[in-house]
Length: 195
Image 1 (cartoon, one colour):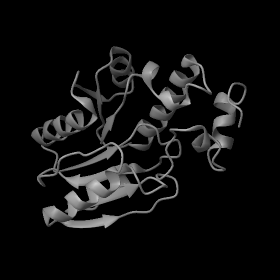
Image 2 (cartoon, one colour; image 1 turned 90 degrees about the vertical axis):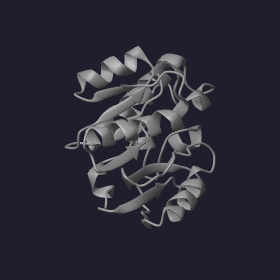
Image 3 (cartoon, helix red, strand yellow; image 1 turned 180 degrees about the vertical axis):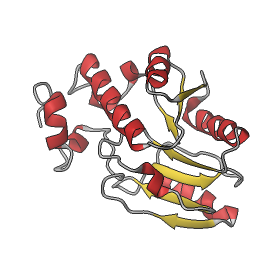
Image 4 (cartoon, helix red, strand yellow; image 1 turned 120 degrees about the vertical axis):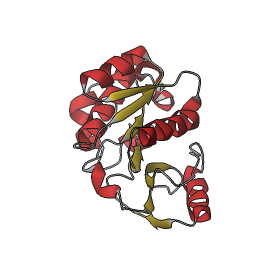
């Protein structure tokens, strides 16, 4: 399991008009906790370039893949190479901001590339793939379409998994107000976030 995690204090910038910095950091850490729990029982690697995230990851039993200045795609590609170098034949890559994540190991299919898009079918929230397939990470705007095209070009078997829970990530205030998310966030942020 590979989870790239941005520095908690710098995460969720699009919520800055709604949430003060300490609360955005608390939200980012809370979501990352949920994702790392959903990764169990898989060996888990956290790609990061922040000391606070690295210390948090180690305290959760994850291995830290340090990648300063690499950007998200570079950190993921380096992480996959490192995980493959340690003998893994398959990797699941998940964003750290999936508040309803559970049983992430179920996404993997031997010998297949599996894509889980976000609910807008724009981003790629979870991607599962064989380590020996040449496949560069292409996160950012429109990543689902980019990843789908790249996956199909490999010649490997490709499937798309539409998953109600894994499709929901939190980037905007509207995401926070989603009917499945607002009740979950209320105990965490209800007093500071107008849900």
